[in-house]
Length: 115
Length: 111
Image 1 (cartoon, helix red, strand yellow):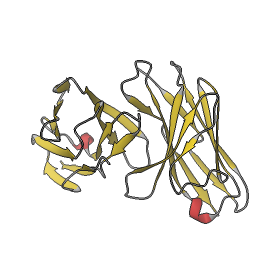
Image 2 (tube, each protein chain N blue to C red):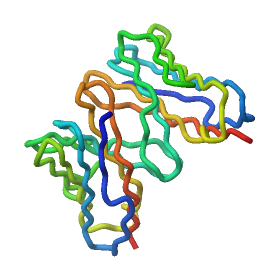
Image 3 (cartoon, rainbow over the protein chains, first blue to last red):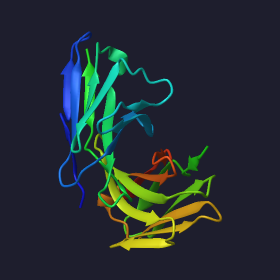
Image 4 (cartoon, rainbow over the protein chains, first blue to last red):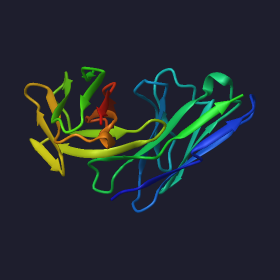
């Protein structure tokens, strides 16, 4: 089945630095990927929709200059958290629709801790 | 705006019990409904996908049903095992391709 690989699984960074999270579709082409954020014991919150070759679409309240999304190829989307602060600490998960366009496959998530 | 509700938020059952997890939604104009499992600190694993034209799907001990007219879906787990302990999320996709999630049901299966 469709597999989405997400790296890194865990990252600790200092306040003010930037962190890049990668999401790759391994056996299918993903023209659209989705980035979510999940707070402890809460459901997933959609941050943005990443479209290959065009600008990402951000959900209301999500700072696009802080959360930079690049979808340069059909198999790779990246989320860069710029000038990270402790309040950015969270669990970030990416997702893509499978090759048949029906179901959604999720990455394994990235636990970001900003100290 | 689609709203997805999963009640109760948590459930504890003894091993071997058959159980039903419920999911209700407000807008019946959906494309697909998908049930996911999430283990602590992990990503989401897709369990079952029901397309809009379908009424149910089965995989092993799992069976999911969809009734768009009543705005309900159920996930049936047969002969529950401790390894089934996880959070189960129901999610629906609509015309905008975005998934709307319920808050999930945290299941604990006691040995």
